[in-house]
Length: 95
Image 1: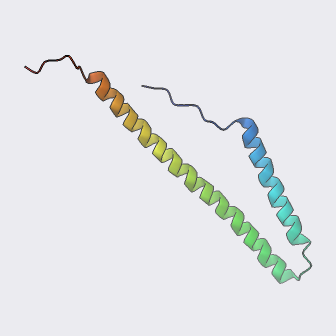
Image 2: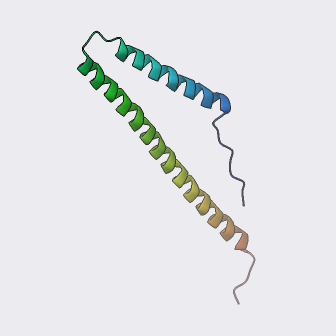
Image 3: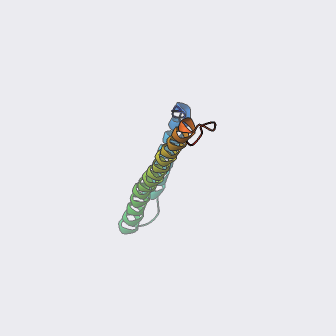
């Protein structure tokens, strides 16, 4: 059976993505805090920002789960094909 291919995400990319997310959330939070509006509009925008962040995490998890499920199915299909090919003898006679 073939070995599982290594993941393409490097540690540097993971750190860059985490830092980028942190900077984006901090910048948006800073913008909400410094808006020249009252407390209620500011709270509404802050709550919208929180909702956006949590739904982004949910969407990313759904995409990851879907990708992993298709990866497992393709590995199972590949294992079945490998088994059929190893069991097939083109020179066997049917007697």
